[in-house]
Amino acid sequence: MALINLGYVYNTHGLDGTLIISSNTFFSELRYQKGTHIYLINPHNKEMIEVTVEKFRHYKQSDYVKFLEINNPDEANKYKGYLVEIDKNNAPIPENYYRFDDLIGCKIVTTDNKYLGTVIKVEEFPAQITLRVKQDNGKRFFVPFIGEVFINTVDIKNKTITINYMDGLLG
Image (cartoon, rainbow, N blue to C red; front, top):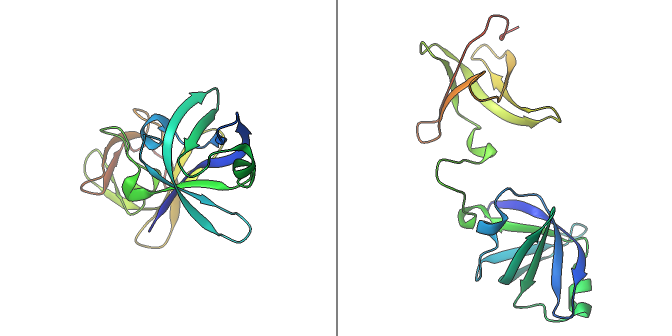
């Protein structure tokens, strides 16, 4: 089972055992739907507990989530510091969106259909997302993941990313 990190528990709220989660996902509303199964993971020993979403609300950068299995502040306090994750297969995303790990393995081609290499990693730098691409000869180069400037189209189904090639891109 491949898991996607949604954030971590940094506090509790109220008397019903609601957890306050520092959010690490763009799609909280989709991921914390009532009845969704989520995993709380102890970062030290990797102990995992499966919980079920009862209620959700988002406030600022935090997600307030009440799970069916956690019903008071004492129970909730046990999970401070735990990672919050969801099975990738049960992690919905809006239509026409994709996950960064779906980009790995995509062929990079130019608008005139010249093959340049394959994405081997998605780098998240403070300034921008960047694709690390490996050519068939083993050399590597980076493509800034900036729509309309470098990225023309992304076709996850056919594992192809079409880019606007610029001189000097390959080094």
